Length: 395
Image 1 (spheres, rainbow, N blue to C red):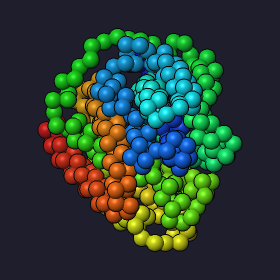
Image 2 (cartoon, rainbow, N blue to C red):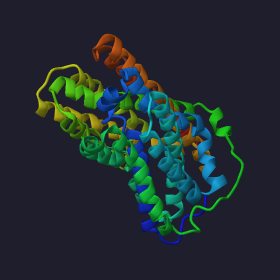
Image 3 (tube, rainbow, N blue to C red):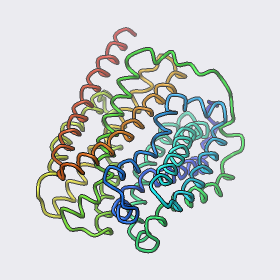
Image 4 (cartoon, helix red, strand yellow):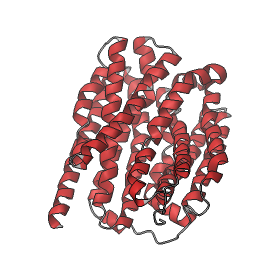
C-alpha cells in the first residue's frame, strides 16, 4: 500500500465511496425483487435464496487473496475493473431468460463487488492524510447500508415501471456513472506495488475466530434480509412498495448502529465486547419480529431496533483485525479471511433458510437456526477477547 497522502483528497474518497454504493445496490437488489422473481421465473424460495447468495461466491473464493490484488494490480485500476465487471454483469443479468443465466450473472456481479470492496478502502487510505484515515474509513464503512437503503427506496418505482429486469440493470448503470467520475481520482493514487502474499499470520487461531464471527453475523443478517419484504407482505398485507420501504428501515438503522459501535470503542469498550453486545438483544428482537403477531407501528419499531443492534457488530470486527495482526501488513490477510467468512455466511444462510421456509411454511425453524448463529457470535467474541487480552499481557 502506498504511504498516506500529504493532503486528503476528499473528492477521490467520495468517488471510491460511490463505487461501494454501486456494489451495495448489486448485492442487495435480490431482496426487494424476490416476489417479482418468484412470479416471473417461477422460482422457489430456495432458488430465491441462491439468487441472493450467488453474488458472494467470489467473495468466499477470493477473500484470503483479495488483500494482495490491489498491490498486484493497483487499487485505482482494480476499482475500475470492478466497476466494468459490475456494468457488464448487471446488464447481462437483466436479460436472463432462465434461472441458470441469472445465477451465472449474479456470480459475475459478485466478482465485481469483491474487486470494489477490496480496492476502494485501499485507495481511500492512499488518498488520506494519516490524521484523516479514521474519518475516511468511517465514511467507507457506510457503503453497504447506504446502498441498501437506496435500492430499497427506489425498488418500488423501478419494479412498477420496468419489472425486476429494470431493477437488475440499476447496479450496472450505477457502475457506469461512477466510471465516468473516475477521472476525478488522481492518477498517481493506488499504484501497483507488487509484493509477495504472506499468509503466515493465518496459522494463529485469532483470524479464524474472526472469520467465524463474520460467518455467524452475515448468515443471520442476509437470511432475514432476503425474505423480509415477502414476510412483511404475507403477515401485514403490505404491497411491494410498502414492504420495500419498511424493509429499508433495517439498513437505515444500521448506520447509527455503526456510529454507536465506534463510540463505544472510543470510550473504552473492548472490540470483542462490542462484537458480542448486539447478539443478546437480537435474540429477543428477531423472534418478536418474525414469529409474534403485531401491529404495523410495532413492526416498524422492531425493524429499526433490529437494524440498530446489527450495525454495532461490524465495528468490533473491523477494529479487531489490526489488533490480531502482529505487524501492520498482516492486517490484509486477516481481513481477507474475514471476508471469506462473510461470503460463506451469505452463500449458506439464505438458501438454507429458504429451504426451511419452503418445507415448513413457518419461521420457527429458521429462527431457531439463526438464534444458534447469534450464540455462535457470542462464543467467537469470547474467544477473541481471550486472545487479545492474552496478547496485551504478553506485550
